[in-house]
Image (tube, rainbow, N blue to C red; front, top):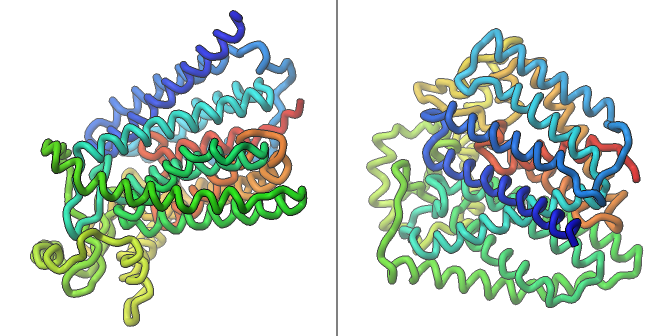
Amino acid sequence: MKTKKFNILHSLLIVLIILGIITLEIIVKVNAIKNNYFIYTSIFVILMLLLIYVLSIFPRKNKIHRKLSFNIPFLSVWILMCLCMLYSDIVVFKKYWFLSLILLVLFTSLFCVSQQYTEEGRDNLWSCLIYSVRIIFIFSVIFCFLFRPYTSGVRYMALSTNPNVYARFLITVWICLISRFDYIIYTKGNIKNCMFIYAEAGCALFFLYMTGARTSFAAIAFITAIWFFFRLFFARKSGQVFIKYILAAIPVMAISFFVSYGLLATVPHLINHPITFERDEEYLAEYSNGSLCLAADSDTTANPKAINEIEQDIESAIDNANKEPSLLKRIIMTFRDGESLDNILNGRITIYKSYIKKLDMKGHRKYSKKVNDYRAPHAHNNILQMGYSYGIPAMIFYIILNIFSIILSLRHYIRYHDKRRNSVLPLLITFGFTITTLTECMLIPIQSLLAFSYYLSIGELMNTQKE
């Protein structure tokens, strides 16, 4: 009985710490990291140290007494990347200082501690992450339904000041839901056990639709397709009935989608106490003249249209827009005839070229850079951002790290798809993170839940410990 109570308390403490980390990430994105980087970083370090300490207090059944067993090439690339970043941090003191030490010291320590867990124990740790993400998602949905109404013709920001930020949070939510769904399928669980997952998924798709975020939509579509084909292959190989779970999901997700639409359209206005954040701005799906909207804040891009001209278009754009900014409409705009690739990508090609020209061996102080008389906050690509901020050597090792992650995550799922509860999680996190960072920048774990999850998955994929 004492052991059982300790296991429950242990898991509860891990969930609470992860909830604290996710809450911190939300606060950082709402308030902007640049104004309070020292405070936010200090809180994150404390939470990480608490997490490492709690993980080091092993439940008896989850601990193994063996030497550390890492994938040496993967570990070497990780350490070399961090050391190159540390060199850059020293020779060019960064505005967001010593991310290298956070990765090298805190996350590597976390990797070492998790090495001492059994496979079941590591699955429990991943389950704690899943529960934490789902809890935050449910609270965010309730908050939005009560206090964050949407404006006609404007992309919905939800629990953020930027629609793209909340959409990237939804990628991790979707990954966690698929992982739970995958577990029920391989254990041949009752379809009734999936109903709440279906409802959450429908709600997540609704908010993704309202944000109008094409990058997040592409990431979710891609990782869902990868999971579906793998799970279909495994199901056919084992003779398992798989499609019935998918067919049951469609009506429940559709109902959840439209119920969410109705609640968001009515409840905030009935309560009539909207909550706004200081940095709230309006991000339009489309301007009246048909040109694409600037993304903003962490998703701001250079655009040939001058800022004062954009402001003049806002009122007419809202008048001419549909009732809500359709994600499908923004996707269709991507394939509109006559649009340059740079315009379709909201000026990202221009940004990429500008950052490439400034790549060097030492890196730069700021993440941002002036592009055509406009300061882009980051490179909108993790590889370029790593090269610009931390130098070409760090960028090379970062590329190799991503390649390792993709290969090992595929091998991990193939090996454990019918043996472990959360075997698909590292695969989905790795692909979701990799795809998203082709057009977004997510290096700092206190800014991004997906980046935080990716660093955690690296530790799992490094682990060659066998029971």
